[in-house]
Structures are given as C-alpha cells and as structure tokens.
Length: 133
Image 1: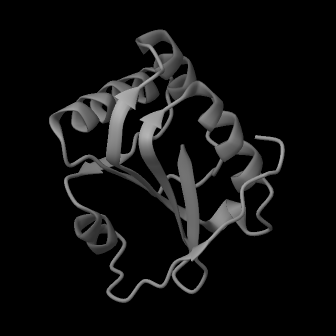
Image 2: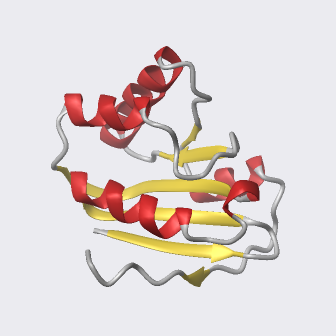
C-alpha cells in the first residue's frame, strides 16, 4: 500500500510505502504524480521505512528503475532505515544508473531526507489516490 503527501510550499512530494511494495503501486504513483500541475518542479522523497513485505521481484524492480520517472526532476531521496529497504534502494539505484537516469540519494531517516532538501519545517498534506486502484 502507498500513501502520498505533498508540501506545496517546499515543493516536496512524499511517496510512503506502508507494509508492502506491490507492482500495482507503481502505476498508482505514476497516475497520481503525473496529474499534478507542477510535477516538473517537484522534489520527491520515497519513504521505505514501513516496508515489511516485498511483492515485486528483482526483474520488476529493474524494469521500474529503467522506465522514465513519474516526476522528471532529478531531486529524489530514498529513506531506507532497514537493511532490506537499503538493499532495495541500492538495487533500484544501480539499475537507474545503468539506464542512464539520475539515481536517488539514499539516506537512513526522514529527517535526513528533509536536510538534503534544506527544509526545516515541512507541512505535508495527503494527496488523494485515483479511484481506480
């Protein structure tokens, strides 16, 4: 499951995976983020801190990494506090590099992700997910 939120003042979108990473989540993320009017200028934090189950195999993760990102900006940070989430992040980043795409920075905490964007007082509000999940 995913949760999406945005801090419009600081131009940051958060993609938070809760419990699991599922291949269907990627399509939901793409539909939601691509529909934002200011998508080209948004920065992104992908929070993997809540992941306990990975339902996407290595080929699916590699395929996702090689595709064009939903947000065109290169300013992306992955929050990977556990060894499993760090490993997934490194795998994604390696495939992204091999595809000639900008790879995300990987950090261990959400606070560190905000520091990377030089943001001290973020205020996130939920983004509604498409009805056809």
